Length: 227
Image (cartoon, rainbow, N blue to C red; front, side, top):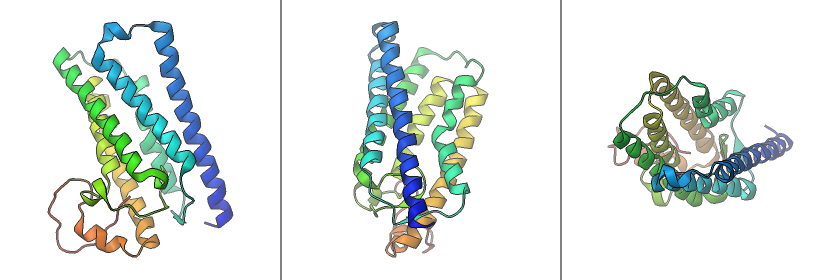
């Protein structure tokens, strides 16, 4: 992709992500002001909403301030996969009503969502200006949680997704979760391809750091890469 196309794609990406972030945050604030039912829904629910706003707001900030790409993915598929993986769970609003689970299960789901949101916000802070939804190389981050697994942000996002599945449990949300994880695995692969091509040190890093499961023993010296 030419430098001109990279710049255009970057601008479009920034506008899209920030517009989505502003819409979601505004919707949450408007709902709070119109319903006023947060006290009745409990402190855990309120913390979950605060965590969601924190994560979305931070995603908007790092998107606006991120560095330019030094390399991008080839073809359309990596970008479509990234978009689908990011926004797939919006479909949960159109699914049939979930099963009625015990309050303890819903509380556990909320706790997982809170952990997922706050830990994802932390991963965004670590990535900083190198964050991107679409596969692209901006800077190589191998410290902190990235010294434990190559894709810690995807791991923390899945913690949130598991909580969301449990909170709105049905066969359809489970199916949606499986499809989402398959998309995320493909996103990791696409990102690794770009990072391997952009950073020569990435191959050795991938040989010694597990992909997404912490402390997983590495098999042989097969080289993959991270994102």
